[in-house]
Structures are given as C-alpha cells and as structure tokens.
Image (tube, rainbow, N blue to C red; front, side, top):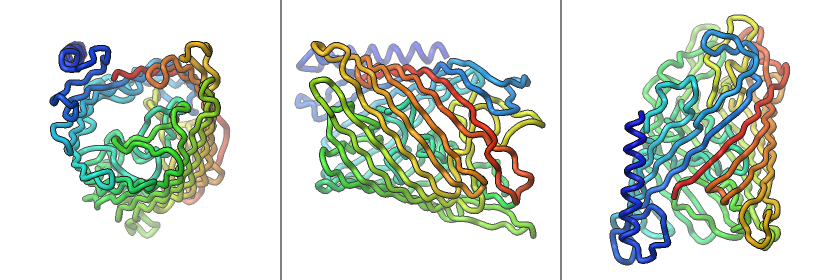
Length: 440
C-alpha cells in the first residue's frame, strides 16, 4: 500500500511540473497539462479526500470482532478520489477515476486504488453529447449520481440506495446521452446492472434477482429558471455558496424488468420489475453577496416500487461486523437503518452560508444545515424518519472544510414473522466530524 501511495504522490508532482512549463500563466498552479497552444486540448488531474471521525450509538446487538458493543468511536477515510480528464480532440473527452471508499478499521482489504470511472464522450454541441463506459451517468433524481459540494456531511443516502447491488460505488457500464436546449437539461442512460450473487429469493419479501440482469433504463429532466448549471460531469452541486442563482424543477425515472424476486407460501417464485419515479426542486441563491450569505433548499418526492415488502438497510461506512443471535433489531449491525424500500419517500434539506468572519478579506465562514427524510415503506408498520443537523466551517469554499453533523435514526424491532411489518422502537444518534480537501 505504501508503494502505491508513493507512486500516486510522484505522479501528482510530475504532472504538476509539466503543467508549469506548459502554461502561459505560471501563477495558475492547477494540475493541467495542455496539448495545444489555445488550451483546447488538455490533460487535467484532480482529486479529493474525506476523513471521518465519529461516535456512534450502535444498533441493538451490534458485534465488532466478536465483541458486543453499545457504542463505538472510530476514524476512517470516507473517500479518496484521483481523476484524470483528457480532451485529446475538440469534441472528444475521456474520464478516468480511481479510489477507495469506506476505509475503516474493519476494511483491511479495501485500501486499493480501484477503478471507478472509465468512459469516453463525444459532444455534438450543447444540445447533445453521447458517451459510454463505466460511469455514474444515470437518471432518477438530482443526487442519484453521488456527492459534490454537499450542504451536509454527505449526500442523501436514499439517492444512491441501490449502491453495491446493481452497481459498484454507484457506477455501471452504460451508454448515455445528455444535453441542454435553452433552459431544458436532460440525461438518459441504458445500463448493464450488476447482480447480487447471494440474494436467494425470500418468502414474502423481494430481493434483487441473481439471474441474468435485464437492461436498466433511467432518465432525469430539469427546467432551469435562472442560472444554468454545467452538465460537464454527472454530479450536481449541493450548494454554490451564493456564487450562482439557481432554481430548478426536475423529474426522473428508472426501470428494470424482473429485477427482483420473492417466493410465496406455495413456494412459487414471483418476479418483480423495479419501477422508480422522482420529482425534486432545488433553489440556491445569494442573499447578500458582499457579506457572503446565501440560502439553499432541496426537496424531493419519490415513489419506489421494488416488489413486495422490499426494504434496504444501509449503514454508511459501517463500523459493525455482525449482530448477536438475540437482542438485535430489524436494522442489523452498526449504524444501519431502513433507507429505501417499496413505498413513498419525502426529503427536505435547508441550509445556507453565514457572513464571512472577516468582511474586509472574504474567506472563512459557517454554513449550518438541517435535513429530514420521511418514508412510508410496505415492510414497516410505522414511518421511517431520519434527521440530520450540522454546521460546516468553510476555510476555502468547498475545497477545504470541516463539517460537524448529528444524525438521529430510527430503530425497528424484528417482526414476529414474514407476514408482519416491523414496528418502531427507539432512536439512536451518530456524531460525526468530517474534513474534506480538494486537489485541483
């Protein structure tokens, strides 16, 4: 591992020195290497790292390395990304990205610089670009592609709720098309999803099918009332910190035939399509540009159909390794809770930036934010409600920032049998401190 890190550091330094000799303006220290005098062809290197320190009230019965624990503190690396964007010709683009996710004390083998993105794209004009390869280009909602410039400590978990089942770190092999026609922005994709090889059909509860997967079709369409957002990458900003005035309304959908299955009391196997629909709204605008204040609001409504009683427990960067045979909950180990399932989900996120600490030299400032997810799933007798409240210290915009977050998640008791819904029992808290630094 140490040799990989040494090689990575050497590459950054090497290409940084190339950039300095190639650019007309040496004060521009970004990791760019230009292939033409007019800078229309280039190789650009960038990356980022997110560090987490947290204290978690664990789900009932959680086990870490054969020891049952009620609470746990840990330090982890949430993400490391190293990216190369290559423009060899005027209209063709290649993107390569690698890096691990969720490197914690229980992930000794998850420290390799795994390949994430590898795709090419040809641009006919602003109205149309087509591409293919392995990427996060997909539809459904604003944040279905993953995080970028988040308002809170991370993206809404429900937005990428199939992560690790139909994809690898939100990436799939796909063909896509995207474009902007005036204020209308669109993206559509057809993908070859991965399968969950260990998901045997369950009685009265859908899980993802292990058979040959059908194509996954998705799309997302939005109308931009004010400033237009860039569609150069698949990621959408969580907030522009008052640098833009954005008001968008979007709709999206995704469909995969026979994606899930379950068995009945008569031992018949029933196939179910995955049919998900979403509508969202995003507002992000300055309040006082001189003081640096801004307001950001995001709201989403989803109707998700995964088949009978489907439920997905997600524990982001989960420190738990298992659960005790008795005394455990329906949530499972660690910090997991029911993020997605067949049913309806409503999400609201509100935040914004406060005035710069030094009005004469704009720079550091605070950004408080709160969010709530309210879901009604078939598999649960009671609503699933999760709260987040946090504050971010912006040292250099999104390029260098600390975020402190408190999350309150619900715990559900195990149902009596497969024909009964799980009932709410209590709440657990997680306290998290994140530091993110960008390299570009």
